[in-house]
Length: 410
Ligand code: TTP
Ligand code: MG
Image (cartoon, rainbow, N blue to C red; front, side):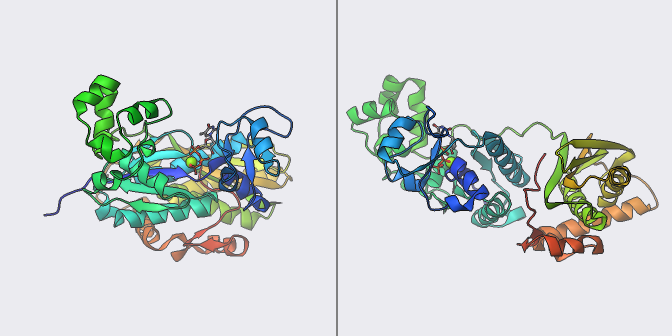
């Protein structure tokens, strides 16, 4: 028998707002970049690049002071919509790996992966895969800490920034935390720090060794939590499964506006297969399909089709999406800028009691077989002829196509 060790992952995107700006404008790489407000405007720093942090710039600092300290920095107003989009896509990736997710703001989340080893392999390996997906799909980097408690995982993810991965082995939490400065412990901020100093608590180990009765006297109930945290003991497990998902969708903006029907069809097929794969992974069926199109003038439309019976095959999703697409393309000469396909009205998949295997069931078995091959070897390991056209348009990496914009959205 083997025992199951708690494995909590803490994810935190590196230098989030600046990273998103750099993904859009690579000429900002390596430069002193501050996201706060446009030149001449008042406000505080939201995010300073690591290069700018070396000059003492940090989040919360008034921009006027930042300009004095570092006049050569590039000050950007930022694109909050885009940060929200990346954040949503980031959480969507994490959610694919465990339903036990606890988002902490836009760029940070805990994931409970306890007991998932038989499914994904060693925790550090799945962390590497998630890091690669975030890099490829979102063009930003994420640091990951893995440990038996969320607090230790968080300290580990901060300690390995940027683009790091640090796993504290099961049972190693207290020893990992002990020598680290007390201010690295989440919850110990500018307010608590002077009190800690008065109590001669300088390292997390000092806090762990302090009598909890003393801590309770000084910090009240919070003292107990601090004591458990310092010892690397979990006090608030991630037990909340997110509310049932109501829809699954994938969309992408084309590298250039197009009315090339075979190419649009291939892209639709690819997106439909990705939607189908997720639908089956969630063990759900869908009642309807939604097609989304954005024309070159940015007008957007959605069209729905309801299945006679809930479906989960790529064929059902694609065929309905295609019918809706061809109808629109035949009557509208505009170029397509974006295409998306989604499914809704999700209902759990239950076993059917049919005595004879219907064509639908054969498709279902085929889809499940394809999914398991792709889970192992990537999307491009096995393809239908129709999506081959994508090879010429989109680069391929780690067994999937890199679409011009993230193909992940819900
Ligand atoms: P953080 O994760 O605290 O910082 P960061 O991602 O910029 O850098 P790090 O690599 O150290 O994680 O915050 C995430 C984003 O939240 C940050 O990019 C901008 C925004 N933010 C603010 O708008 N105001 C703030 O005071 C802070 C701390 C962050
Ligand atoms: Mg961050």
